[in-house]
Length: 180
Image (cartoon, rainbow, N blue to C red; front, side, top):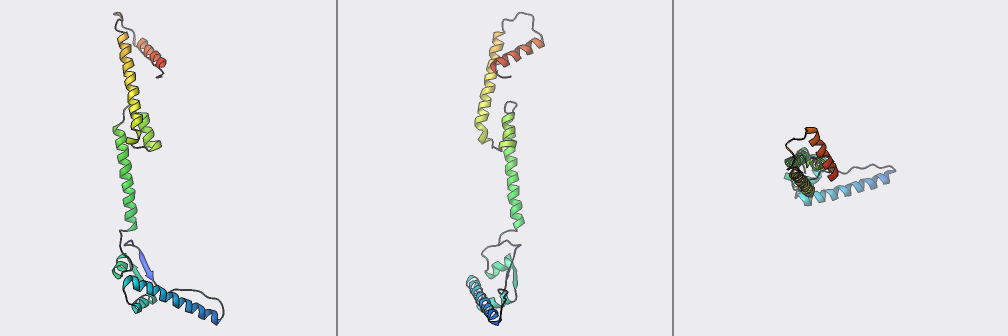
């Protein structure tokens, strides 16, 4: 039972409509129910039957600690609010850790994969490992292609091409390779 909860034991209640015989039957039923409840409480707590009946008649209220001391409950837990708050904060910590792990993997080649994991799929760093390896393979291929292109240009005459010519050539090669 949570420590901040309350438990109340009381005599059974009921409503009746009818003549005196109906009223008598209802009263007898309520007495039987009271005895049954008192018997259950007595077995559970070890409190004598007469004392249980007196507690029920008085409508006895108990917090978690009082209920445990009398044997009505086995265990007193923290306040419900604390458990919810603790669970929420644990979730916040887990999400922050997930985002930090993804941020540690960030690079321009991986940005799309990481952003999708952070905000769309909510995947962890380990869950997107295959996609990251594929992106590394693609970036190595691009680097290899650039090295090949630069090797092919080694016999260029002393006159250097203009920046616009270089950019135009790079764009053309990237289009041919399907990069752009």
